[in-house]
Amino acid sequence: MKNKIPLHIKIIIGIILGTLGGSLFPQFLDFVKIFAELFLRLLKMLVIPLIFTSIVSGTISGKENASIGRIGIKTFIYYITTSLLAILTGQLFVNLFKPGLHANIISPKGVNIKHFAINFKYSDIFLKIVPDNVFKSMTRGEVLPVIFFALLTGFFVLKLKREEKGFLIEFFKSFYALMMKITEFVIMLAPYGIFALLYKVTATSGLAVFKTLLFYFLTVLTGLSVHFFITLPLLAFLITKKNPYIFMRKMLTPLLTAFSTSSSSATLPLTIQTIEKNVGVPNSVAGFVLPLGATINMDGTALYECVAVIYIAQCYGVHLTFSQQTLVVITSLLVSIGAAGIPMAGLVMMSVILKAVGLPLEGIGLIIAVDRFLDMFRTATNVFSDSTGSLIIAYLEDRDECCPYL
Image 1 (tube, rainbow, N blue to C red):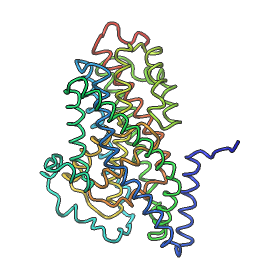
Image 2: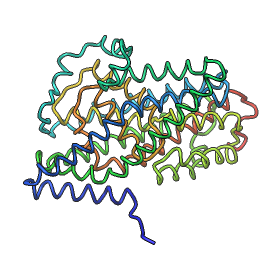
Image 3: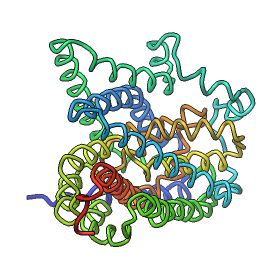
Image 4: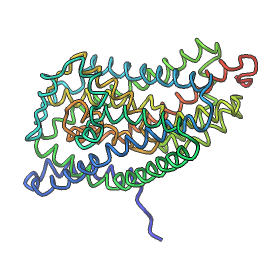
């Protein structure tokens, strides 16, 4: 039997070879950049169908598996609140530290990265959300209208008659499963795409870009740490009056599993078992809140995407105003709903936000070197947010019987 090399090892090899190759042998740039362009095209190919099917499927699953009622409303409010707090935390630190300020990256030919900054209006955030022609928006790759239409589709599918609803539920779930298989295929090609992207970056801009990468890594890590160790525990304590750090200790096994696998979906069975057995959250709450959270609640991913997009803009010398960053925040929030719980899915979703704000997808090459490592930290944050949500909602449902082991 052949010993397969793990994907993360291949990615590390691609990072090293691409960085060294681009700096030592820039004369091969014309050949290598073809593969970089192919990888970017594959990512672009995924954006619209993946975001549409994942949001529709997530919306359908959330309402199909449990009645909306009290638990559904509380879960929705919690997930929106914590995702927004995570994004704003990341936005604060990336604007405070400005990790990409002195990168001075050369913009790709034919891409007017100043266009968005000059022509953007605050009202565009709301006008761009509602499509006048959804198929035109899809063909143009306009993300916000597609997200809006996907949310409407998922909601109204559940309002149909049983036969019609059953057919569409199976259709969208199957379509989403298909897109996940294609996404997994593209992720398997990631080491080669990463090699080509980093080769292109270092061949055109040199190694100076990586001096800012350490500050970017620390900025994301600082934001995730604040959300993980301060924001979520404080929220849990204020509502439940229980010690959040004892809760964190009891959830250590799924948190470490999430950290090592970088997959909130793979960790889900262990998370449910631990929070029921070690904490005492009833299955009626955990069985709804946690599976839904693994699909639509991605605090760590949302924070990371917000920081990464603003960092990429800083690297290209684009100053994003408050209203422009508001679009980044809103898009990060909406995209985090469709960020599937698989390794490096956030990287695919990153292309959605970059496209929404008019930045080149080549910017992904600036952050790819540390993405796999940050993926572990943000996945652990995602799982802890889901678990904290289960604790809070269980307490709000039954204060006397909730969580006897805390």
